[in-house]
Amino acid sequence: MIDISSLPLLSKLILAAGFMVGIISFIIFLRYPIMLILMKYNPKYREYIKRSIASKKINKFEGAYGKK
Image 1: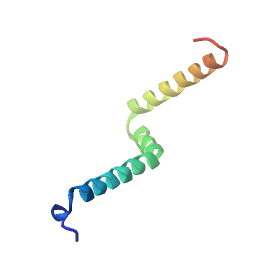
Image 2 (image 1 turned 180 degrees about the horizontal axis):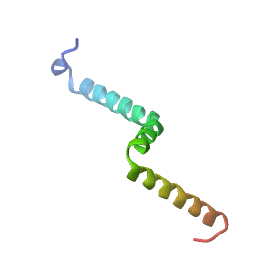
Image 3 (image 1 turned 135 degrees about the horizontal axis):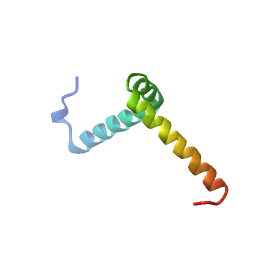
């Protein structure tokens, strides 16, 4: 086991940055399964996702036809 308090400052920063990158990539990788789980257990979240998808589709069609 590494004693973190005995490491130099630069090594601590590199270690913290590595953990941050790992956690962020884990969250990005599991984004859709987390959304599906939330949609299953929370009806309000399900309605929010439906509204946001519908608004994105409307914006996509407006952008395609030059309307803003």
